[in-house]
Image (cartoon, rainbow, N blue to C red; front, top):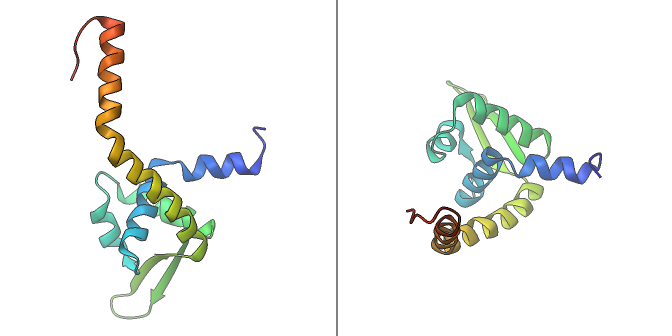
Length: 120
């Protein structure tokens, strides 16, 4: 099971930066410059974003378009394959946004049961 290609792909797409990058590109729904993508993802380093975009391009999720202008313009957008994944990730993102309070309550209840202390 560990050698299953689907498990390897699932490991890749469940990466934090992959999810955030895919959701950023999908939310805007149009080609985005690197600097714009970077501004939309809090805490991502230049190195990590570059690695993530390259990996997504290699996997067929992102298309990179270079326009020979001065300076050179590079845009990123989701491919049809990437749009399919974005649809699923957006559902998970929306679920997380809807359930944050419920999960926080469950965590507080669990912590109280385990430690006897109320946490926030």
